[in-house]
Amino acid sequence: MILGIITLIIVLAVIVFLSIGFYIMIFGGGPFIPTSMPAVHKVLKHAKIKKGDKVYDIGAGDGRFVHFAAKDYKANAVGFELDPFVFFLAKLRQWFWGWKGKMIRGNFLNQKISDADIIICYMMPKSLKKYQKKFDKELKKGTKVISYAFKIGNWKPTKVIPKRGKISKILIYKI
Image (tube, rainbow, N blue to C red; front, side):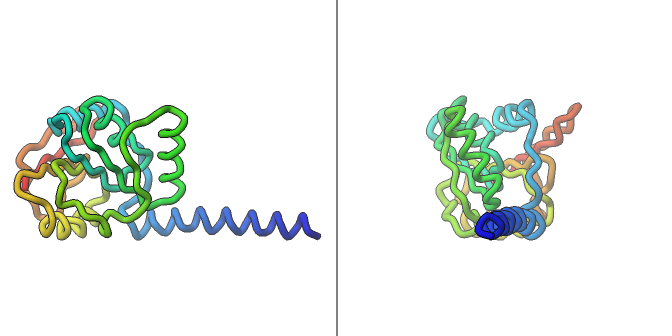
């Protein structure tokens, strides 16, 4: 009897945990689709990050942009991830493999981003259009916003690196 109740509680907890992730995927920024490592390095190269730059990755997933921005470019890199499962994955990678940067579990819309030098995002177009309002309101002149694969609302990119092979286009905007 006790074992059955404990099993039921565990099953319900797993269902709740997974449904939170599903809800976030549908109504948040989009599903967790890891960016390939070659694409991560190409995006960061084109971001032209300088040592000490404040780099935010919104919808940071497992934290790979955050890690390599901090490790390879010595940036002050921070990632925001809403999905608890994916955030947990990012924290495991930090702990097991010594990944760099800082991961914050939460919605970046509730965070102050006005100190950003560079924003990196790999989000769905609908989400990016919604987030454009926050960018327009908070980002300082000169901030670069790099979007992997998708256009941001009605903004016009200052530079577009075309799709090449399996690496999607990279859109670079400057406030």
